[in-house]
Structures are given as structure tokens and as C-alpha cells.
Amino acid sequence: MSITVLYQDEYLVAVNKPSGLIAHKSWVAKDAKEFALQTERDQIGKHVFPIHRLDRPTSGILLFAFSGKTAQQVQAQT
Image (cartoon, rainbow, N blue to C red; front, side, top):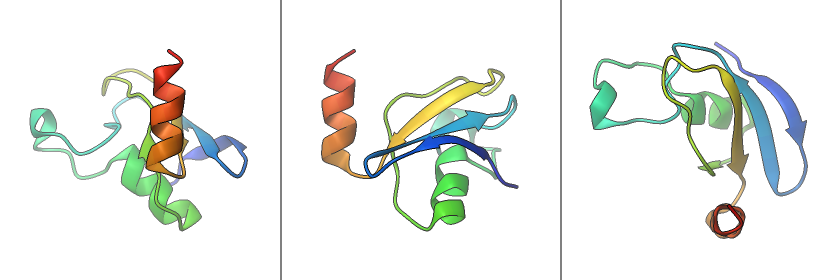
């Protein structure tokens, strides 16, 4: 599986999460085998940190940061 990258710079990457894909590993969805976070990490070869999440049935734009510090700074702005 691959996820479409909509935007990427030195700090952030925005991807188009399809419906049915869970944003990140969670006890709520123990049956899930694929995750947007891990898929994107594998796809671009960098660690990514979620800035927010979307529910499994929801499609839309997910924003990841390339550092925990950047993720915290963006989250603080919301």
C-alpha cells in the first residue's frame, strides 16, 4: 500500500488517508494490520510523528511532523 503525499517540506508531510485505514496503532483497532503512520514512515524512509488523527472510516488529510518537537509546536497552535 502507498499513500499519496500532498505536501512535504523539511518539517512536515501531509498525506491523503483513505477511508478504512487507521491513522496509527491503537488498542481500539487490534485487528488492523496497516497503519497510515507506519506506511508513510516506510514510504519516505523517515520517522514521522502524528499531529492529529482521523477516525478509521474517515478519509482526509493527515499531517505528520518529522520531529516530536515540531509535532508538539503545531499541536499547541490548535
